[in-house]
Every structure is written in C-alpha cells, then in structure tokens.
Image 1 (tube, rainbow, N blue to C red):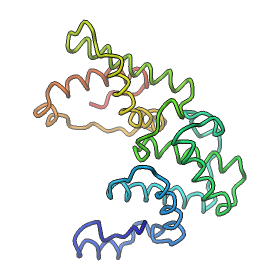
Image 2 (image 1 turned 90 degrees about the vertical axis):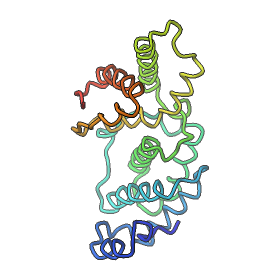
Image 3 (image 1 turned 180 degrees about the vertical axis):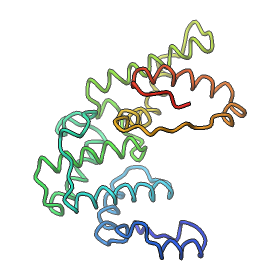
Image 4 (image 1 turned 30 degrees about the horizontal axis):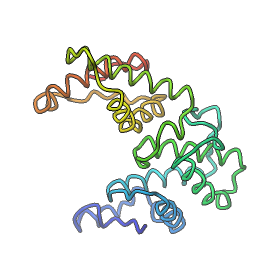
Length: 231
C-alpha cells in the first residue's frame, strides 16, 4: 500500500505536516513494503482511515523492534493460546507476519514469537482483523472472561428492560462476536488504563435508552475489570 500524507487534509495542512514530520519513520521504504505485503494478506479491505491508523501502529511497533527494544514474556498478556494451537485467521496472519519479519529483524525465535503475538493481539483488539473469533484464538481463561461479559450483558438487559426471557442465545453470540475486538481491547490495554471522563450528555440526548443501558452494563463490567468509574 502506498501510504502518503495527501489523504490527511488540504494542501496547506499537508505541507505543514510534511514540514514537521511528526513520525519520519513512516516514510521508510522498508516499512512501507512490509506493511503493504501484510495488508495484502488481509481478507477484508480496510477503510482508508483504518489503513492509516493501522500503518502508524505498525510503524511504531516495527521501529521499536528495529531500535533493539523488544518485549519480554513477563510484560505480555496471555489472552491468546500458544502460537501452534491458534486456528483460523489469527493463525494465518500470525504466520504471515512471522514470515515477513523472521529474516529482517534478526530476533531469536522466542522473542520474535512474543513480538508477533503482541502485534496480532493488538491488531485484533483495535478491530483491524474483524473476522477473528474467540474460538480461533482465545485461551480458556479469556473465554471464561468473555462468558462473564456475556452474562453481564444478559443480566443488564433483563434488569434494564424488565424482560423475563432476556436475549436469545443466538443473538447474544452474535453480539459477543461483534464486541470481541472491544472486549479484547479492554483486556489487552487495561494494564495501563487511561483516566478519561467522557461527556455522555450528548449521547443521553440523542440515544437515551441505549446510553442508559450501556452505562448499566459498564457499571457491572468495571467490577470484573477492577477499574475505576470513568463517568
């Protein structure tokens, strides 16, 4: 993929961005080639905005490795199963990224595996691999936590809408698959939570029922994640 700054705005803003070069590493031909090859392996075409966001995430990760700052097993999570037991798209993209970087980085097999797993987990959590499924990647512990999320979703629905039957199992499964990247995002990045307090008054104004139910769901969820209230 040919990533340029031309998509970022008007000619004047583009010129300013080029002059400042906030992330000059993004212009490295080697990085563009690797990312373009990896992007071609994805089964779904990403929107241009997602491509650019993914490219910068990819670039920061690649630059860190190139500078000799690798992750260690003690600082990574264990949300995904071991590499050899992965299935589906997550296994496919893990293998593709490993093939791309095994010769280029010079990392040991163990360190490379840690880095690749971290990168793939991040890509899934950021929604860049939407076809990824919990069954194809998640550990038993992660699946158990996702089940808790589903239970909270169901109980919140019953309590909020005063429903005796609750959501159907098939509907819950579809919602769970749709929210998999978001739930993985919470688990993957919750080690260093951002202390943000979003203004939800506009949401209440335009989507009062959805917002109220979501807040109820989050109030229950924060106990599972052991994180402070952010509203």
